[in-house]
Amino acid sequence: MLRRTKIVATLGPATETPEVLEGLIKAGVDVVRLNFSHG
Image (cartoon, rainbow, N blue to C red):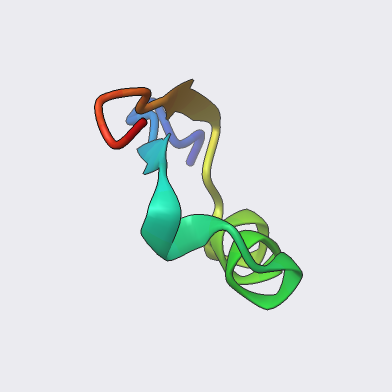
């Protein structure tokens, strides 16, 4: 069965390490958005 639900992740201070980003990709993230409110 085809997965129709999309997973959206917000990139910010908690996701700045390569290990965390790799984990998001392995978890199946489809779309990312950037959070600039932490300037």
